[in-house]
Image (cartoon, rainbow, N blue to C red; front, top):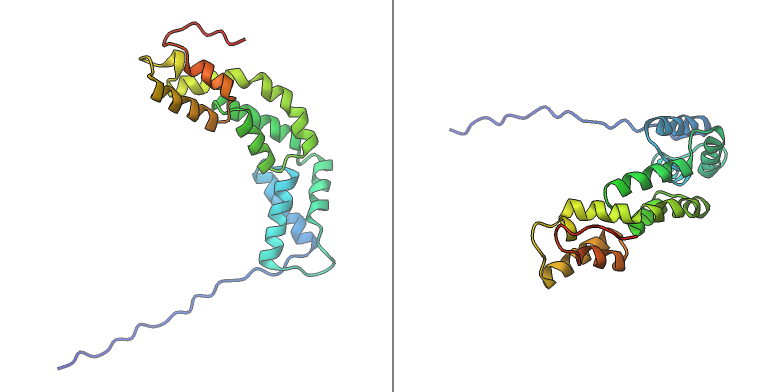
Length: 183
């Protein structure tokens, strides 16, 4: 005897699609974003463009860049302060100049602000390289002397972390326990 067919009740799940954005909704969205996240003009502009693309737009033409500029003028966004904080955090983690500069570019920091931050980043280069070497036990922070192959791997790791080749080579070439004088 065949068993009776049991049909499950189908429940249609509908996603509620948010209404298209207008100027006031876009401003509320931007305000909510800057209150939750430290950001830059570039990032805010990209976020708003993505939201307009996802939800659509009604009304006059949207200008996310102008809204980001307005928020910068009001003091809600400060690209230079964001860049300083990001560069300091990356230096404390032991990352080098190239990685920091790349992260600032990716965050949408303008050329003018990036150039203003460059001297501070250069000043921290040696400290950041030593921090990286300490974390990875390279050079004077190693437990045992590295052979040539290991030293080359260590130099490669430091370069990938954004450090200068000559600085990486000098640090990796030091013997464990050596006095550190890179000035």
